[in-house]
Length: 156
Image 1: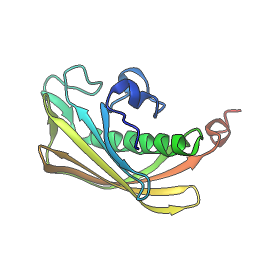
Image 2 (image 1 turned 90 degrees about the horizontal axis):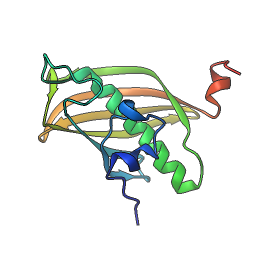
Image 3 (image 1 turned 60 degrees about the vertical axis):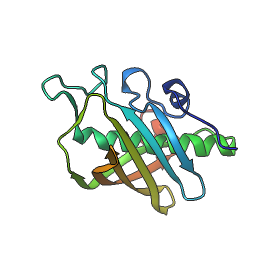
């Protein structure tokens, strides 16, 4: 049976982001065989990136929604193996294409990410976001996983 992460509190167990920086509201579905996840974000005026003059969240924030979805997938994979999730860094975002300028208040953004290339610690994910069943954003995230983020950044 798959674990359920249908609240922000449960999602917070999967990702390092806390407080307002935790952008995901819930994990809707995941598949550890194909390394994919579907998450949801409810757009509201208390969202960290909400802009009153836009009446919502700028669409460029979708790449962070995708990045946190990747983090949640890593958290789920780690839990399934009895390990801590790997820390990851976004190395680049490419092919970002937005078909809307803003995610409007009251909408739910559905984010899907799928691991499509893994070479040792370098991992590429395809991502897309939909609103009301309509494609809003597509992007490719190139990431790297590290065992010790402090030593990787020479902070020790």
